[in-house]
Image 1 (spheres, rainbow, N blue to C red):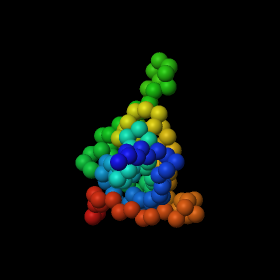
Image 2 (spheres, rainbow, N blue to C red):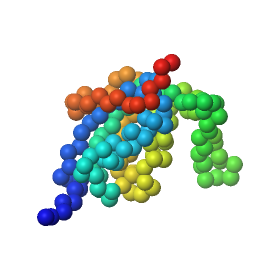
Image 3 (cartoon, one colour):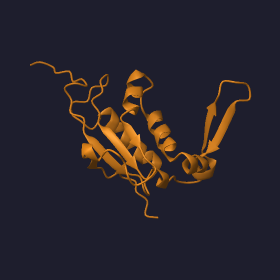
Length: 148
């Protein structure tokens, strides 16, 4: 028997679309990270890009539990003295709705060159529409939908 090592060229990359309306951010980010990485496939290879493309719509309607709307703070630093800036989750979602999902998924991927390539396969949009209809994305239901 021969062991087959899969790589980016001999793996089929599907497109999935996720509606983020009333979905808990962390549970959705976990599912997205697993799809991007390819962990749901039997041909998963840790060092190769065997994952799929993921489109997220309605990013501005994603939910968080507890007091994260006001207490979760995102920091960024310019590199200059006094250059630290901070925003709450609510402020970030109001101004750049895609950034919160992007940062949540980025934190769940490995910290290497492969993760930077995987993040390019994540497409996040704040509204209902997206420009990837030609790829015929498959709708993906995510567990952790809130009833409110």
